[in-house]
Image 1 (spheres, helix red, strand yellow):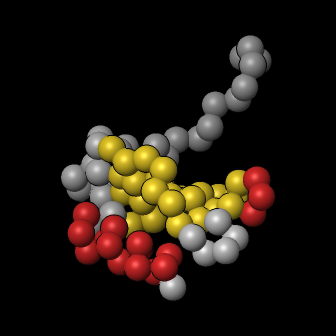
Image 2 (cartoon, one colour; image 1 turned 60 degrees about the vertical axis):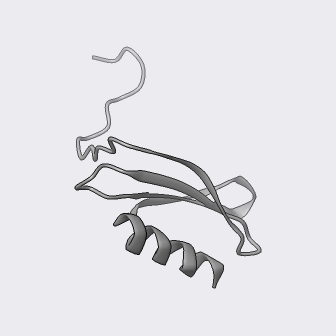
Length: 75
C-alpha cells in the first residue's frame, strides 16, 4: 500500500511514470520513473517488506531505444 502512494505521488505531483523495473540482490525491486516531457526522473528501491525508498532524482531524462552495443573489442 505504501508503494501505491509513492506511485500516485510521482504521477500526480511530477507526471512521472515507470519507465523500467528490475530485481536487485536480496529481492529488492528497483524502478525508474520519469516524465518524458519535462525530463524529471526518480529512482526507487522497494524492499521485500514493502518499504519504498527514494534513491535518486534529477533532470534531463532521456530514453534510449537503441540496440545495446556489444561489450569488448569485437568489431
